[in-house]
Every structure is written in structure tokens, then in C-alpha cells.
Length: 315
Picture 1 (cartoon, rainbow, N blue to C red):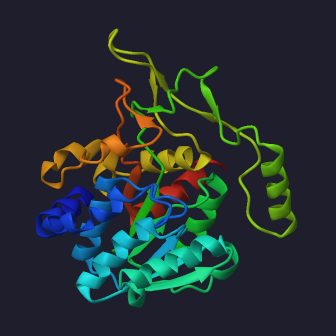
Picture 2 (cartoon, one colour):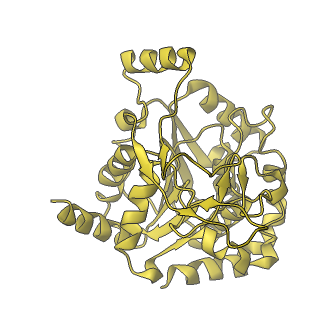
């Protein structure tokens, strides 16, 4: 089935339930509830919830939990299904403990199995029969490759789905923190660090904890304004993971993957723009706040095929 058809069916059947989730976008920047803040778009969260209600997965793999914002969309759906569990991994003990308290507070803890530590070390023994692979973590190509190779490629399921966050189609026209313009046509994935952050990164290295890939320049597309009332925009992809994800998408059939950036306005019944005004650091060509819906969904089988084809092309 076309992946858009899955989303259409899921929203048609369960979209009316998402009004009960509005406490999430209303509190996404409330650090008393979400210490790391909830950086997940309202429409993306609704689609996530509806897909889980529709697919009724027995098991979901999530990396990383942070303080549990996106996890709550999933756990709420599982509770409604009265079926399934999320295996979620988080490196930061403080964030993980905050998330676990939250799951208990909202009475969804029975549907979440939380793991604290480096996912690269402790998730390799995870089951192989996941219906949904939910990646929203380090945002580097290296980590995404590890996730796909370690988990997705090892699964024999033909009905699984893969999710990547913080990725946009290359034709997206967006602005971040009043930029562009940038200097040149590249974005520095590892911006200059303060002395404190450099020290913290050094401690993480000494403790064997994962860090960002070494500094690298991320190519991006810059779009000139269409008229004098608009501003310069760019494609929004600021990480090596996003560039890598777009390479994989280019090797898939259109019916096997979808960027939620492209379809958010196709579902007015979900009021996808209701919380645009709360978007921090994200805007459109008119410099109006806008949630970008930085989410990519694809069929896991298509991902595996694209990954192998890309490996052949890279030889």
C-alpha cells in the first residue's frame, strides 16, 4: 500500500482523538514538565499517534527518549490500543529519569520500557520484530548508519516502518533563527563551542560517551526571495544525518516514503498549523513562526533496499 494511504486511513479513523493530545504542544517548552523541551511538531505528533493506533504495533524501538515528549504521543496511542510496548533508549540519566516520572504521571508507564545508557552498547540485544523504528537522536550520518545496520537491516519484517526526525525535503524553503543569509552556501554542523562545552565534550570522550562527528560542512540549498515581501530561505537540512536521509529517499519509489513537510496542509481536520505561533527559531519566507514538520516516514523494506543500493554506488 502507498505510504500516504496508510496515513490517510490512520487519520480518517483516529484523527478525532488527537484533540486529547493538545496538552503536549501547549507545554512543549515548559521545562517543569519537559526539562529538555519537546522539539516535535504538532502535525508530526498527530500522524505518529494515528499511525500507531492504526498499525497496532506490538513493539516500537525509539532512540532517543530525551524527556519523553515524542514518546508520550506513542505511549498514549498504545494505551488506547491496550497493546504494545516502546523500547526507548536515552543516554542522559537526568532526562531519562524525568521521562520515566512523566510516563507514570500520565499512566502510560506500563507501555514503555526505558533504558538508560549508550544505545550503541545496550540496544544491540533488543528484539528484531519491531513494527516502528523511531530515530530522533544524534543527527549524524554515522549514528544513522549504525541504527539502520544494527536494527533495521537485521529485521526480516516486511511490514515495518522507519521514522527520522529533523529532516526536510531538499525543496523546503525555511528560515532558522533569522537565517539565512549565511556566509557561503554551507552550514557548520559543529559550531564554535564555549570553553565549558569543549571541556564537557572532552569529558564525554574520556568516559566513552558518544559525541558529534568531527566538524564538517553541510551543503545546503539557498533560495532567493520570490518578491520584495519575502526573505531568503534555505532547505533546512543542517546535519549530516539529514543529507544522508535525503540520499536514501532519492533511491526510493515515491509511494514508499513521505516528508510530512509536504503534506501537513492536506489535513485541515487536524488543525496542523494551530501551534505554529509557538515555534521557536523556525519561520517561513515571510519570517512568520512556522513548525516545519521535520519528519520523514518510509517503509523499512524500501529503506533496506535503498541502503544497499547506496552502498553499491559508494564503492
